[in-house]
Structure formats: structure tokens, C-alpha cells
Amino acid sequence: MKYDDDINLGKKFDLRGRRALVTGSARGIGRAIALGLAEYGAQVAVHGVSQSAPLESALAAVKKLSPSSFSVTGDLSDAESPEKIAEQIKRQCPLPDILVLNASVQYRTKWLEISPAEALKQMQVNFNASLALMQICFPLMKEQRWGRILTIGSVQEFRPHPDMAVYAASKSAQENLVRNVARQVAAYGITVNNLAPGVFATDRNEEALSNPEYAKRVTDCIPARTYAEPSDAAGAALLLCSDAGRYITGANLVVDGGLRLPG
Image (cartoon, rainbow, N blue to C red; front, side):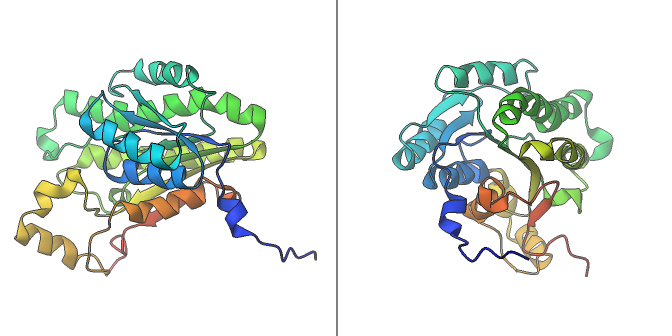
């Protein structure tokens, strides 16, 4: 058996010359992942629903690390938005060879009270838009025989919240899509993986976690006894989006402090 003793991990994580789109990267986990990819050299398209102060702030931070990065906008609840985002990218550079599908919509509604509009919007943003962007970006990845697709799921794939039934279902559907597509595209040098965050201290969770009683119930369920910070997702994303993770595909990497574990 031949052994390669020159591991050179720094080179394997190097993303110089790569182009990334991170959806929903104006804040929270998406912003942290965009910064992580930029730090290792990727040109990043930072995405928000529309032009906003958070999007401008995220882009400014990313550009300090990767000056050629830029922003794109589009409401992914609109079925035409993936194509419009792709057109914006093509004005700046070729389509991305790193696609991070982080944008999502979440409603806290008891399952008997979920409206058709709420259900459809969550499925459109959390699943349909992911599929559309994967379809758009795949041909270039196939042609160059290198690509990374990373969906951002949720610990709710394992522990669905009773007030977020459709959100949890949409994330489970997305993870199933990852496993299906990963097998079909692996021969082209393309990996497709899912990263499932647990409870993160982000804008989305700020209101709920500001209630001390609720916050204690949540942390009591987490073996690590603390929330994650957005940056805790960035290292995992970097692994799955670089050559360091070239042999990982169809995987579901859970970053949850042990929340999914039984006990």
C-alpha cells in the first residue's frame, strides 16, 4: 500500500480560485460561513433578500478577506429568483463551484394552525429553491469536474419542534435530496452534503432565547449545556467545501452540542 506522508492540510483547505454562493448570508450562520470561505480565499457572492444594512455589513466584512467578493439579492420564495440570482452572478464571474444553501424560512405555528401559504412558502424557500440552484450550478461543476454543494439543515431533522412541523419536514426533505443527488454526481468530482445546526445564538433565535425559563429548558436538553455561535458552523462548512473534504459526500454533519442524542 502506498502512503502519502505529505498531508499539507493548509493546501487542502485553500479555496483560492474558487467561487462561492452562500444564500441567506447577510446575518447569522450564513454570514459566518461566507466569512470562513472568504478567509480561505474564495470569491463569495453574499446573498440577501434585498439590499439592506445587514447585507452591506456582511459584504464589507467579506471583502476585507476576499476583495473580489460581491452581493446578490433575491427573494427565494419567488420561484423565478434562483435564475435571477444566477444572472446577477454571471455579470461578475462564472457560476459558483461552491454552493451553500443556507437561506430558509421558519414559522412557529402549531401544526393544526399552519396555513397553506405558510406551508408553501417554507417548502419553496427551504426545498424548491435549493433544488433549483443545484440544477443551475451543476453543469459548470460537471464540466470542470469539481464542485461542492452544501445544504444547511437543522437538528429538527432528528428532533422536530412541535411548533415547526413544516420547517422540520422541509429540512428532512432537503437532506433526503442531498443523499439522492450525492450518489449521482460523485463521479464528476462533486460532493453534496448537509450540515445540520442545533441551537445557535442568532437573530432568528434571539427573541425565544431571551425568555430565561425557555432558555433553561433548551440548554438542559443540550449535553454541551450551551448554545452554538455562528462561527461554530464555519469550520464544518470549510471542511465540506474544500479539498480537505473531497471524500465526504452524502453525509449529514450535525453541529448541535449533542442535542440530537437520546438520553
